Image 1 (cartoon, rainbow, N blue to C red):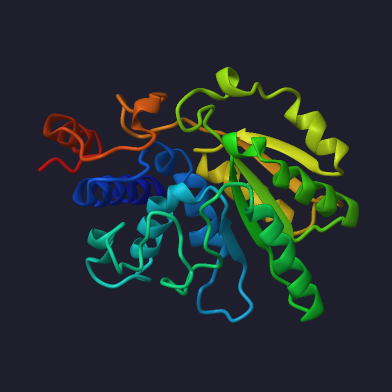
Image 2 (cartoon, rainbow, N blue to C red):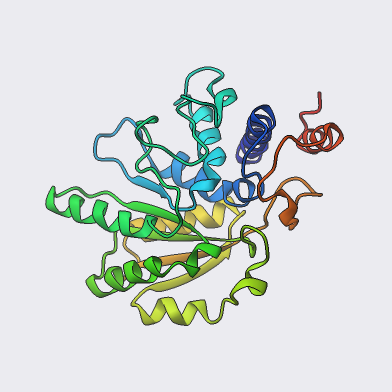
Length: 266
């Protein structure tokens, strides 16, 4: 029950921050929220020096990670209201120069998995026993750099990088299938030497169990987790509707309807 209430609260934070600033990626922030929530809240201890890392390769979902940081009291009071403002620490895409708690600044898609390799090699040199969680978008898999990094990870059997794919079936303007059809993703990742898992990306307990298994080294090879998700998850009229990929200020009736569904009508 607590997880459910947290996630409603987080979706309210996201929608209000985007509404306040008149710009932001709403649908993709909602689709990956549970994944980020489990990783950050359950498996990253920000007080620990050699903590686990989170690389948000699909950086346009920054409102989701900011909302979770706010939930964990890692931001200043009311800082979410500064989303995408000039000189704000909360830029439209994660900017580590402004917000130091971030592990990397991402914007252009396709870079996160390569960055994760760098973190992993650094951890090995410094004898750290941490994990690097990297969240990719499914549309992002069209970037060639992802597959170059995957080839390296599989070849070197790097097991402390955990790759998640937010499989919401859409990208910027169109569906994945209408842009560049995904075919045999399982076979592709396995051919690079990965253990391929698939799960419901909105099911907290399943996500927790998968990450516990991975971090306890249940698998003898790198793991990629394809998460079946719904774009706009949590608000009925936004679910599966790519109109809400990137939005300006919502019409007041839509804003109030969304808050009502999230039990926060005002």
